[in-house]
Amino acid sequence: MKISTKGRYALRMMIDLAEHNEGTYIRLKDVATRQGITLKYLEQIIPQLTRCGLVKSYRGNNGGYKLSREPKEYTVGEIIRATEGSLAPVSCIADTPNRCPRQGECATLGFWEGLWKVVNEYMDGVTLADLLDKDQKRKEDGAVYGSSDGRYI
Amino acid sequence: MKISTKGRYALRMMIDLAEHNEGTYIRLKDVATRQGITLKYLEQIIPQLTRCGLVKSYRGNNGGYKLSREPKEYTVGEIIRATEGSLAPVSCIADTPNRCPRQGECATLGFWEGLWKVVNEYMDGVTLADLLDKDQKRKEDGAVYGSSDGRYI
DNA sequence: TGTTTTCCTATGTGTTTAGTATGATATCAT
DNA sequence: ATGATATCATACTAAACACATAGGAAAACA
Picture 1 (cartoon, rainbow over the protein chains, first blue to last red):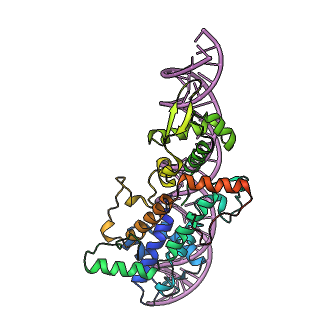
Picture 2: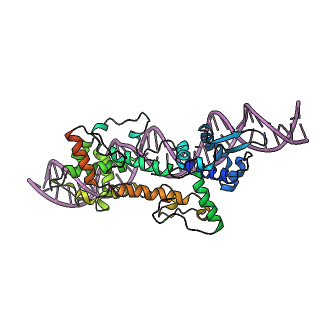
Picture 3: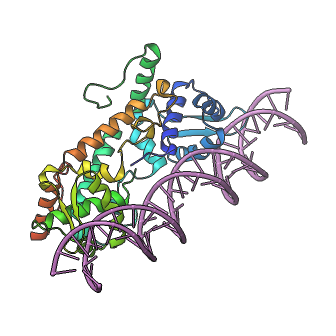
């Protein structure tokens, strides 16, 4: 039940691109330095975001990456799904052709579908802009995160 | 973001033990046959449930396993956690000593904590008895699972 | 004493994770 | 043109994990 570094780093890249957005393309090297992750690894992850249209890329001397929309137009869910793939907790319910032969007689299927839905709804309920707000507040004062009910926003 | 066979099979074992509960100990061999999973693999998973006090075991000729409580007294969450470990989506927030050195400056930490909470709350909101009810209904007629809002109950 | 069960530990195999490395291709500044 | 600097594509690897299989010890009963 873990999110891999691919998804986690992708989210941090998106936040970094949003925070340093001045209209120009941002070098991945700078993102890597700021985030403390090797350039080569980020180079391997970010093409998934480009292919899904989440960021725009530009080659060459003053090239780099930048967001293709406003931060509030991204949900965290689509960023994570772009890099991690389906968030289905069991492969037998995903769109993949791994359908289980015991489907008709499985007592737990509905439970897993419910979990899938809960995870997606949580992630799609938080935007990239929400994370930026938190980050700004954190930088201003050493505020504690999270609301009283643990829900992120 | 996947649940492994350990957790999934553990849940199916618990359902099986509940459905065939007549007070006596149930042979794991019978569970394995009914569920279509090898005995040897289940033998490797079930000790975690015994150690956590979820089932009672008895050795010898008429030995086997049985639930230590009523089905409605189990949440699915405790069954899954007993076999899968912590459901924290990132290791840096779990109780494990993998705390991240960037904690103070991480904009995503609160988001992951919120996801963790959502997952736990969903799983702890469904009992073993709930899954049994669904299973009974499914056996009676070929009913469709899940309520309109996708929430399992 | 033999049978049947749980219990314990070792082994194997394939996949995934988390990175590292090498080089090609595009773009710009000079 | 040419060199510098960026993305892009692909291959490789070490370690961990998933998903079992296998062999035998210990307990309980008939």
